[in-house]
Image (cartoon, rainbow, N blue to C red; front, side):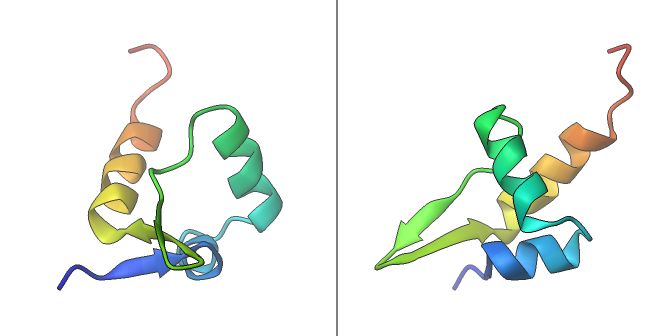
Length: 60
């Protein structure tokens, strides 16, 4: 079973606000999400990949 974050738990884990998450989502810079029933989730793998992308220097 793949574990996943809710939007709230992702924001808490990465110390960002929900408003920043949605701003990143508008810019296409948020991690991939999926819907399970009515819940929007972020897989642990997607969160880790997002973190790697965000850690890259701007010059690349």
